[in-house]
Amino acid sequence: MQWPGFLAALEHRGFRLLWAGAFLSSIGTWVQDVALSWLIHTQTGDPLYLGLRRFAQDMPLLALMLVGGAFADRVDRRMILLVSQILQMSLAALLAFLYFTGHLGIVAILVIAFLAGLTQSQSAPTYQAVLPTLVSRDRIANAVALNSLQFNLSRAIGPVIAGILLAKVGTGVCFLTNTGSFTLVILVLLSIRFSSPSKATGSFAQTLREGIHHVARTPILKTLTLLVAAASFLGFPLMTFLPTFAGDVLKTGASGYSLLLTSLGVGAIIGAVTTAQRGSAAGRGRLTLVYLAVFGVVTMGAVLSRWQWVSMVFLVGSGYTLTTALSTISSLVQEHTPDELRGRVMSIFGLAFRGGLPIGSLIAGVLVRRAGVPAVMAVSSALLLVVAVWLLLRHRDLRAL
Image (spheres, rainbow, N blue to C red):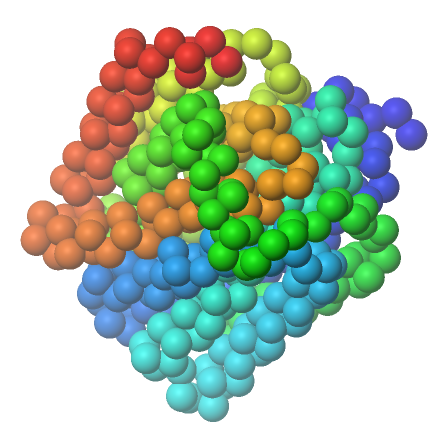
C-alpha cells in the first residue's frame, strides 16, 4: 500500500503495528491522567499536590533513565518493553481497585505514580531506540513526527473520553479504561520482529560513560539536549496546572479543563502532521527556534486571558508550536546518533526532555500557591521566549541545521 507523504513511515509493517498499539495505549494513559488530575484537584484543592504527583512520576526518570538507555544497548529490547507494559497495566488496575474500595488517597496516588515512573525509566529510552530500527534511514524524521502525531492525537481524544466518563460513570472507569489499553500493545510487541543491533561490550559503567562522553563531545547533540531541557522545564508545567487554571481562574470546571487540554491537542496534531510532511527538509534548526519563541508569546496570551474561548484559541497555537519544535529536535537527535549508541544517547535526550517537567512542575507548584497560575506560567513562557531568541541570534550551527 502506498501511503501519503506525511504517513510514509507507516508503509513499514513493524512501525505501523507499534504506532497503532502505542496510540491506543496513549489514549488510555491520557484518560487516566485527566481523571487523576481532576481527582487530586477536587480532593485537596491544593495545586502543590498536582506538581507533587507529576514530580513523583517523573522523578525516577531523573535517576534511572540513563541506566535504562544502557540496558537498551545491552539487553533484549522486546523483553524490556513487554515487562514494562505488563507492570504499567498492573498499576492501572491497582488504581481502579483502590478507588472502588475507597482507599485511593493522595499517598497511594503518589506511590503508584512513582512506581509507574520507575517502569517508564526503562521503557522510554528503549522505545526511542527501537523506532528508527523499524523504518528505513530516510524515513526516520517522518517516523519521529508520526510518533509525536499519535501522542498528540491521543492527547486530543483522551481528555474528551475522560470528560465523558467522569460525567457519566465516574473516575474508576477511567482507570479501568487505561488498564485495558495495554492489552493491544502487549500483543503487538509479541508479533513484531525486532532487529538485533550490535550490543555494547565492556562493563556496565563503561557503557554508561561511552554514551555520556559521545553527547558531551558532539556539539550539536549537546546543544539540542540542553534546548529540549529548557523547553521542558519552562513549557510543560502549563499542562500540569491546567486543572487549577480551569477551576480557579476561568471557573469552567472539569468540562472546561477537558476543552483546554483538547485545544492543546488539536494544535499539537496540526503541528505533528506539518512536521511529518516536512520530513528532512533543510532549515529545521532555525524553524525550531522561531516556533519556541512563538510558543512563549501565545502561551502568555492563553494564561493571561479570563475567557475560556480565548484561552482555547491561544492554546491551539501553544500545542502547534511546541509540538513542531520538540518533534523536530527529536528527529535531529535521532539523525545524528549512531545505531550502536542509540539507546544511551536517547536516554540522555529523554532525561533532558522528561526531566525538566517534574522539576519545573514542583517549582511552579510552590510559586503558584503564592502568585497564581497566570503569573507563574506567563513568566515561564517569557523566559522560554528569551532563550529561543538568544539562540536564534547567537548559535550559527543550530540555525544551519
